[in-house]
Length: 278
Picture 1: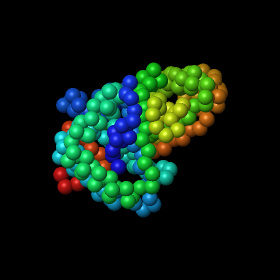
Picture 2: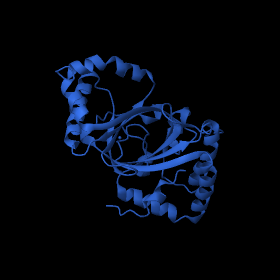
Picture 3: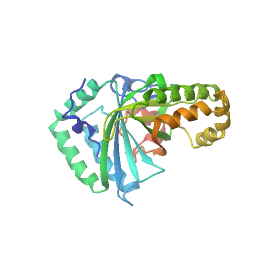
Picture 4: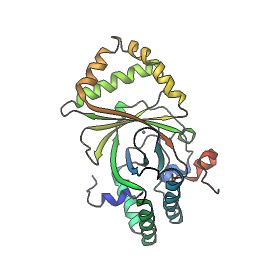
């Protein structure tokens, strides 16, 4: 159910790039800067209800948004590890822009009716849905220009930081980032800090887009070099992580073009993003 903006009705609004939106949609899908605000919508799926079944219900959202000429684009991906679930990523330049997108959708009654109908059909396949909003932490990220249209996977690490240990986490990320820059300067990752969502306090996510899973093998193979690059065999980094991390989990996801709603230049730049029937 891709209607995260509905959940913002009660709020007062005060990464490499993911995908283009608004003015950026007219530009190339490559080299987009990381969004300042990243909204993540999660659908936990019933066993056996993923794949083609889920793609079919998701197509109703795409049709409704396309007919309304909506620019509220999203990138969909399916979990390779962990419970069966789908993630939908939205990018915004600010929370103000998110509010504007919400107002635009609510102003179109026909779009609302079409999305309501799509919600009902999609709801038969899922058990729970969760919406979260994150802000970009550029100071903790290693931003390298990346053509997201050429990426196929996403490595996402979710870290919950213990209360009072934010400074330890930030130092841990900066030391780790310095080591990564030495070992693999082209490595790319963006860090986001949770602002809204379920159990959002102290939660950070690290996103690493991957062209292929070969990059996972490279990361594992580089672990000894990473420890050496810290200057003390990785002891300080390990101590900082032990001090700050309440929990940590890493999972792999594969991009799904059939469930994504993206600017036309994605499909033009790479056939992978063309919907079935195009």
